[in-house]
Amino acid sequence: MNSTFPNGFLWGAATASHQVEGGNVNNDFWEMEHRPDTFFSEPSGDACDSWHRWEEDLDIVAGLGLNTYRFSLEWSRIEPEPGEVSRVALDHYRRMIAGCRERGLTPVVTLQHFTVPRWMTAAGGWAGPGSADRFARYCETVLPILAEGVHYVCTINEPNLAAMTAQLHLPCAEPPAFTGVMPAPHRPTVDALIAAHARAVDILRGSGIAAGWTIANQVVQASPGGEEAAAAWSHEREDVFLEAAKDDDFIGVQAYTRTVIGPDGPLPVPKSAEQTLTDWEYYPQALEQAVRHTWQTTGGTPILVTENGIATADDTRRIDYTRTALHGLRAAMDDGIDVRGYIHWSLLDNFEWVAGYKPTFGLVAVDRETFARTPKPSAQWLGALARAGHLAG
Ligand code: BGC
Image (cartoon, rainbow, N blue to C red):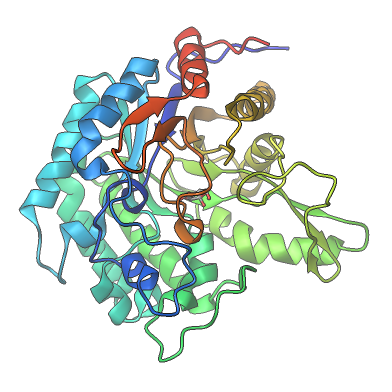
């Protein structure tokens, strides 16, 4: 079995602005977190205070031996009102990009990771009029700082998940209740996201930047009799977005677990299966299967694993999970699939959206009172692997 990864392979860890920065009061999630009938278990609050502690975060990534950091720009900070640009926010991210470079880290930058400015939601969200123009204006605004040394830019994170949750965000008189089961994608949002992505790809490419988007891969499997339902599920909730990436410079694969579909839809995780802190099945084979499915469906768009990880309080399970996932990734690469790198989710124990701070995906623990960072054994393990470029055991 080949356990060596190519020279130049990207090894990294990822975060997203709203999950780590803290104080992102001007976006739609902050608003949802504070509704009287909120379905969030707690608000994001100060998150990990990475808005102030980003240098420490970069030092940790580089010190571990990783060579890549994926992070996102917070649109609501950069453009607090339509067309009004915060120079302070732009400069903040400019310094982060330079900070990566100074430490020998390749920055992988996401332009939009779930959150949008409140004014965007008030205007109808992605499905509202002119959303592609609004996103294009934002891309043009950040282009100068990206052109200063960013190669990989992810336009929109998990548009498929955004399309499934779209109606929860809209300022309707009575937003639909969140039942825990993802609704089908909101069709006008799907079309709007694809249009916004295409505009952004054009803009980024014009400056020589490699552009792509990152997809929530669901590793759909059919139980006996569920074949038709599984094919439909996979198509509308994932493949439509993969197909839209056929001509992109890369695609971000984000895989955690699998979804087994019976004739009437997704089946619950069997009681006998190991479950993680997000109640997902422990299924590290998901990464290899997602990579193969993505490669096949896009017809060969180069792949960057932009997220893979596990919410667990037992760090030895994180190492086991990641080791198995990486063996699978290597096997897919042996079959000729072009994979450029592996970026683990997440660098830090951070704000896990609806579930708050309980599910811990981090390679690094964060004290909720002091924000002190403590790398876990899995962080050292992944860093050593990145240094060696070889997967032992
Ligand atoms: C998202 C992250 C999230 C992770 C684990 C992905 O859906 O991009 O923001 O924290 O999965 O749930």
